[in-house]
Image (cartoon, rainbow, N blue to C red):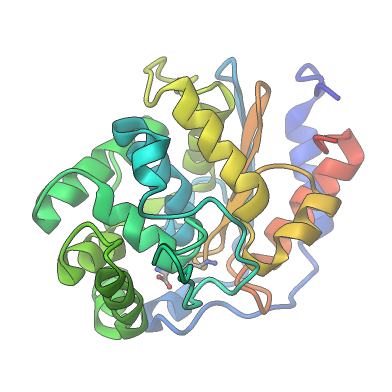
Length: 309
Ligand code: DON
């Protein structure tokens, strides 16, 4: 059902925020040591329509690291540059139903099944143009900046922390390298991936990025075409089935919007043709999804009939 954007959206966002606020369950991510320093009480939400109207509430301008929410946007850049046939020689389009750090390799092809978990995302990053970390990450950063419509900085402390503790990700990269699906050196691919995950964003940025997928590839605030309509559609399709890790099926039943979460506490959700939403709340459930982010999106979806089905 289309959403009436003449409804006092700000009041709605405030109400959704207030309903979620008392829930203190979950834990902030600590397997990347620097992430444990985030303020756990932060809570923000933003909604950006495909006309470019920006609505937000709470800590919508507080910066946090994008983490896995970068995955669909880098995937979109790879699809835009190379097309779906080339990208899917390296990484599948299937929900793996596995945790985000799982060893996920299709036996026959050596491809990670799911581009929204670490193994698939590292392969996706390896497909981005450039031979060095600087070149690859330059393309990624400028692409994500066009999605957000502003310059984005790397949180260097989180980056160092990830690079220091990222041996499981290096191991995943080595497995894909040996299977022939990684398209770069392990160190180049993983360092570019760690930098991509350490980009600093706000809930407002995430809503604009999601709205850029909702329009079919045009940033509705800057007016710039960021990716092709096909790349936007393919990316949104993969988010629909793969975006919430081993909670993707539950999510589709209860929220029903293409989405992606990250261990920094962010979630993006897309209502194609209508709007994008970004949420921020750092405490995570056992699967790595933001507890209050999920709660806010469930409430918005139920209250306003956002479920796509
Ligand atoms: O590679 C990692 O483990 C982190 N940089 C990102 C993981 C992540 O955000 C998973 N999300 N829930």
